[in-house]
Length: 131
Image (cartoon, rainbow, N blue to C red; front, side, top):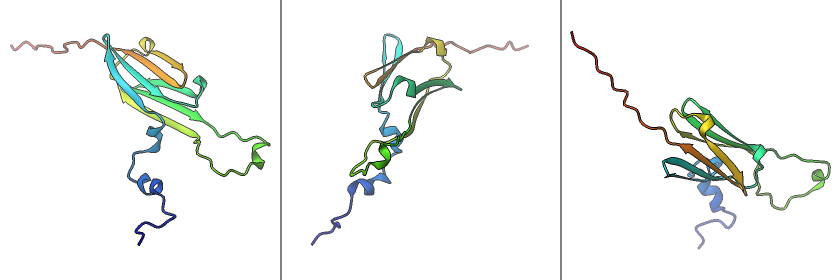
């Protein structure tokens, strides 16, 4: 006796339990080296022009967008399987108060590498004289 219907797809079943698929297309490693923070993110299938890196309110946001441009030749295609996705993908990381001009970004072979200088912690403690 089969407990799982033959047409049942495990992929569809687990989709509702998995995090947002946008994250799955932008996997990254974050590490510290030589006093800097490094982010290495896989963004395969995109061109450098499709990617933007922005710093706002202490958050570093990496966005990549790809549109499904169809031409006259594509309209006559009858897809059997279409797994490549199109749309906008985005990841944000809290980085605090950094100087955007000091961030080094490089995109090569589908990998975005960012080097963010670590800001030295300053002691903001101030003493108030008691009279």
